[in-house]
Amino acid sequence: MQYRRFGRTEINLPVISVGGMRYQTSWKREDAVKAESVTNLQQIVARAMENGLNHFETAHGYGTSEEELGQVLRDYDRDQLILQTKGGPKEDVREFLKNLESSLTCLQTDRLDLFAVHGINNDAIMQQALVKGGVVEAALKLKEEGVIGHLGFSTHGPLETILPTIQTGLFDYVNLWYFYINQWNWPAIEAATQRDMGVFIISPNDKGGKLYDPPQKWRDLTAPLHPMAFNDLFLLSHPQIHTLSCGVARAEDFDIHLEAVNQMAVWQDAIKKIQARLDAELAGVLDDDWPEHYRDGLPAWEATPGGLNIPVILWLWNLVRAFDMTEYARMRYNLMGNAEHWFPGARPDSYGSVDRNALRLALERSPYRDRIMTILDEAHQMLYTGAMKRLSESE
Image 1 (cartoon, rainbow, N blue to C red):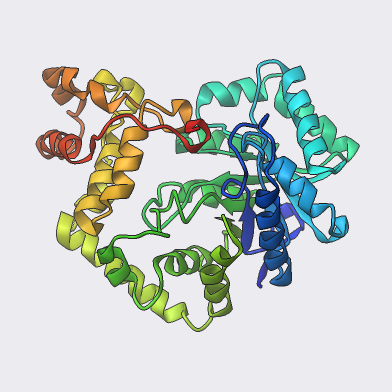
Image 2: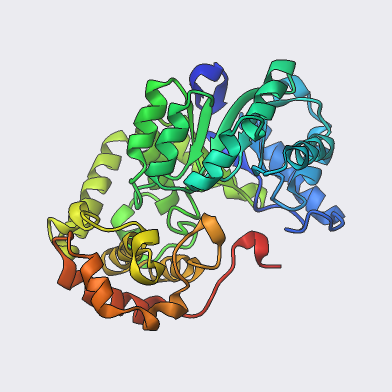
């Protein structure tokens, strides 16, 4: 395993972290933990520790994950572990602190090496978290008391929310999206680097394109590497990125990632060639200018007729056309409007009621207005299959 300094925390993190949202018994925190689930997690943790993956990351919102992890990690030397969890911001700080205390109890520890305020996904949540007497102030007090080692935040939000949150200077690290298929957040990574913050990449295997079950075209384009190995090495080729979350359901899920890290130096030139191949496919299928400029002049989803999240819809259409990523695109498309601030925009089933003239007017600053109008119709016909729920709401 390789390690990187996690910004100003001065913690040396393994470049692959053990994510905690795939192995739990249930997404309902109150459900009883099953013995076979704990046995499976024992095997996961043993495999991780044997290979130097000593950073375990979970969340209060991941159902029984914390409880199960606490039962397994109590058998290990706490000083050899790097333990991180997350808690959602609450308007009532007492509820936030109660949840954090519950997390500590479930994890069977009195201190967290890393704690993130979970889901700062829009300006309203950011302001609620940062208000005087709010959850960030409460978390910083716990940091002073030694309950929390270092404070971060996680986000699925836009740059317009992420950058100001970074610029407060209150956080030691950030958990965010950044993958080959979605590189919008690079300015946030640069801003975090300037402040010497740790950078943790969320869900590169799932949110990064369901790379554990990729379409054949994606496999062909990333050959001879497995798509997950390519994505790992593409991300880790950026020294500004310190660790990638690997959400595992069983011990063998580590295999591809361990092999990729072990061969990182060998594959350095191949990564550049594969990236160039993918870039060329995007440009060849969609045309040279479109991949870089299709978002130019687009309104925010809140300012779009019907609340359409046009940048995301176009992005998903791109992935289908260039890479045959239809299954992934359908999953993300049908989550819109059904996942609150985690994946915002109007419900796809409302698309037919959008005022076409108003939509054309909203796109007047885009150099691709006519093309976008056609793509929106095509994307809806291609991708809409009915409402979907987030994993945490699926049970």
